[in-house]
Amino acid sequence: MLLDNSDEYQYWRDEKLTNTTTELTDCIVEIQNPFKLTPVEKNKLQSLCQKVNFALFQIQPIDQYDEAIISINTQLGLKDFDQHLFVKTGGLAHITQSDKKDQSEFIPYTDKNLGWHTDGYYNTIEQRIRAFSLFCVRPALKGGISEWIDPQMIYILLREDNPDVVKALTHPKAMSIPEHRVDGEVRRATSVGPVFFIDEKTQALYMRYTQRKKNIEFLDSLEIKQAVEYLDTLLNTTTDYHFKHLMQTGQGLLCNNVLHKRNAFTDDKDNPRLLLRGRYFNRIE
Ligand SMILES: [Fe+2]
Image (cartoon, rainbow, N blue to C red; front, side, top):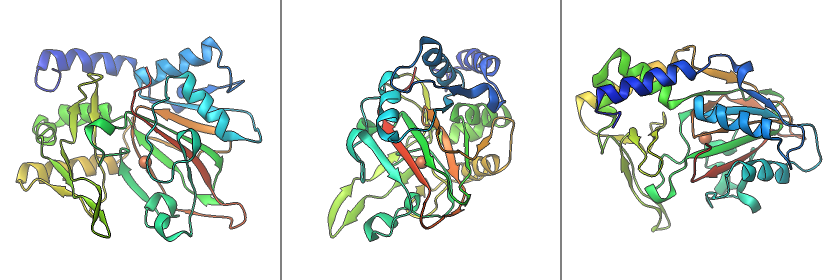
């Protein structure tokens, strides 16, 4: 396994570094008809997701975006969606500022900054999020830039710099999220696991992580504490592999659950920022 076999790791790393790109313009696919991807469009989206674990796409303005996004995702094999809180039909959640109390407790539904994380880091293995899509119906008046980086690239950068750091982060109990209770009832069980791991189902290197400090516990060891600091420092710098983009109407991101963050924004109250998000249990390949 590439985590503990250095020959296997080096082979995988060399492949990854040869195939990757640091240019965002190489990663954008123009889609003519979201309801019928051409073989070229589909190939490009899949090949980008294989090489850099994400693809940006652009579609022409239409009246109803939900169906178009569900159609694109379905054509890429993303059907098995996470039926989590606030999901509407077809598996998409409408990410917008909410004044409903139960929803506005969750940072995505506010205008606040959202730190680096992978989606569903608190999920059980059975509900592991392997891919997600994010589509912009309406940007904010100001701000709301998205940033992301391929977790496999973060793993390489860390391992090349200090192998002890990645080793600490593969500890099976490195990061825990306590159970979530509402009125004494358990809504989500305690989640305990590594930060970096090989996903058994796909044999791909995955990451579960969040920079949130509230309700997150790291294993009480100096190695893990230092490794997390190291990781946060790397995330908060800008490497060639960090991507940053302010999504405009008609633009979307498809990815194998890359690490991502969102910057705070200001809304036009009459036309608030609206993004459509889908979370899936399978990878885009
Ligand atoms: Fe997210």
